[in-house]
Length: 111
Image (cartoon, rainbow, N blue to C red; front, top):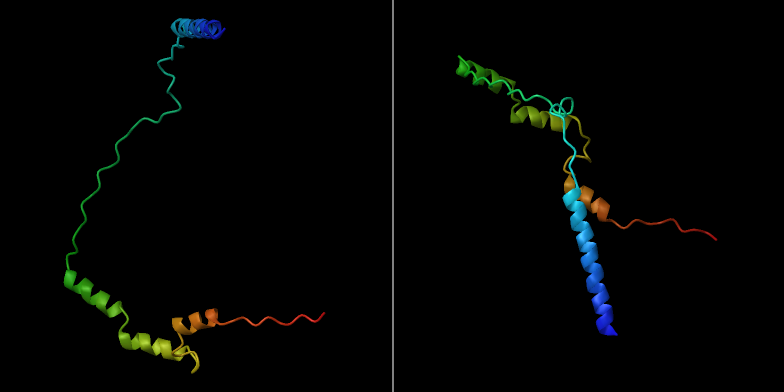
């Protein structure tokens, strides 16, 4: 009885395989039109060639102007001290982190 079942399976698989191969051979791919790509693909155009950077004529004068515009350390310290109160000076990241790590006391609920 198992020989009969295996023979039926082999015959069915051959039949299915033959039908599949027959359909594959009979398939004709649709012919694409020559202008099917028009509208969906842009025409390639090369980008413009970049220009080489121009070196400044008077580099020393530009560097002097840059140095004059850059704030000095004394100016930065003056800005720092004028905008803060006495308590805020010296408190930084460490104070903020310790504030975040501190235990939060929850209000007791009265039932």
